[in-house]
Length: 128
Image 1 (cartoon, rainbow, N blue to C red):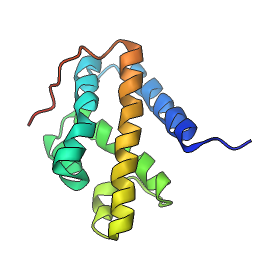
Image 2 (cartoon, one colour; image 1 turned 90 degrees about the horizontal axis):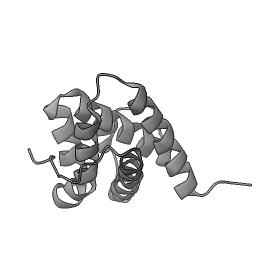
Image 3 (cartoon, rainbow, N blue to C red; image 1 turned 120 degrees about the horizontal axis):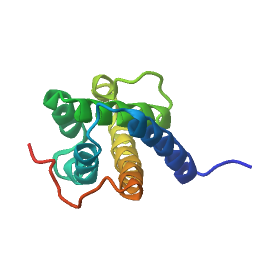
Image 4 (cartoon, rainbow, N blue to C red; image 1 turned 90 degrees about the vertical axis):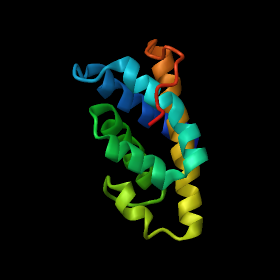
């Protein structure tokens, strides 16, 4: 039996959350706040600018989220590697739109898991 894309997203996000939970250097509430606002940041600013924000932000929370999204989206578009930001410039418009939708859908799963863990305090602390 094949898993649906939603099941694969959920499984991948669940594995990522397990790693976050074990990481003693990640402030879970800060991470959850970043995840919580990220789908809207993608919608308002675009995927490349939103990912650039995480990269420039340069803290452990932003870089972790950047890596997580990069790994999943590149799997979704059938590419290897982990540097989505670098590869986005070579995407055609169809691939770019697919990456945007996949990043939003995946981040929603990360958000659900942060809420399930009780890490989400309901405040949006993502504004630059």
